[in-house]
Image (cartoon, rainbow, N blue to C red):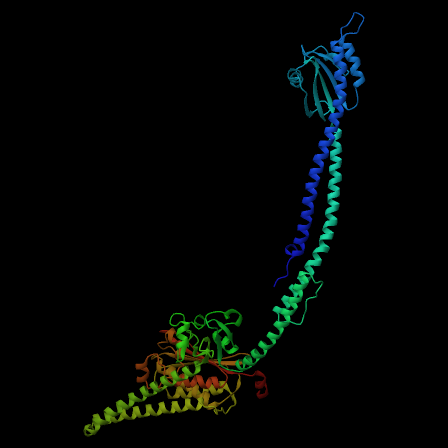
Length: 607
């Protein structure tokens, strides 16, 4: 099991949830506090300014309704003097507007040029017309700061006779709120830091026993039941840890019992040379021994829980229920073109005392060699029977003819006797070849080896054929003159060369050539004999060393061959630790190569 990553651990999730809960709570509290504080500060400021505006409105009202003499100052001058007393740092401007003409009667700013002009401000007009206060927070175009604009009607006898227009700076309030927000954010960050630390400590108290139980569970999956989970307390998690330890103890006892039974069964199955496969009641593989794995070319990990019929390749012909009823063995042929492989499977049903089927056991036997031996025996008997029947049939026919009076004919009788003698010699050669192969197949077959200078030995054999040949065939020798000593059974290698050279002469055309070569390498010498005959088809090239195999059966039998010469040569070369093979081009000829072991250091001792 993979280790749980930090970002997926319950430890981190617990801390994150804890921190997020605190963060959400702090944000809700912060938003509510800031909004209430902002509202309170703004309300207090506006009420403070409004109380001053009410005093101003009273003073302006007195001046507007006052009857003036020649010596009294004008309304504009009187209003200007009053506005000087109400000028302060937080009030940017105060204007007094006449209610009838909407003319500006006075202003607190230094620019007195607007006095006497008609106002165009809609808030002022609405406050006079509707006889109620009009206020709004807007951006001051001159200072670029927020300001509170208030227009209050001046009432007399239930009518608006004018209005006081006031612009108060409130940027300080928002600056204070900004500072308060910074303080709140800093406090939130500090609170979250301490919350995270406390969350980590708190999470550890919860996740530590859970982590211990996870480690114990992983150890149990590996078969280790000796560990115990530490109990940190007697709360719900502590009770879970105690229960987990009790479960571990029970599992340890059950596992010990199971392991004992398993070892007994494993010992029996492991020492079996046959393949054994066991299934559950649904036909799924639950056990397989090593010989069965090797026979089927599978691994235990890949085939456990797989259907048995699929594993054995019986899906098309059998179901699991069919195998439960199968009394006879089933032959499984897994042979390929290059390699035969045949198994025999016997099946035994596993039943409980109640008769309930609990599974199936399949026992596999490798019968490849047995089948191969039976096939070779049948083929050998058939070939020998065929090879003996042909000359015997011929001899019987001619002998019957002679017995019926053909022996009296001086022209026919000698020919019949010659044919009978030829067929008899052919049978003798066949029996001798069979005896030779039988000796080589026996366990106690031994070679009588001695050191021989192979080029001299090879040339002597070629000389015998050259002196005895009765056809127009040229011998070409490409054999080095240097001495090459090899350890061989001289009689057996002589027979090998006689069989190969005889075949080359049989199939060589009139006027053809036979080439003899030897080639020396580090650990072997290679002997090659080439003819210019009809050649061998490519498909038949690997079969010419099989017993009784002939490329052209009619022609070979006509030339007196038994089909065992190259098979005997192969057995003898193999007995010497060499290798024999053929190369051929159809219509151009054939070359037979064989090798013999060669030890250069041993040759130096003979030199």
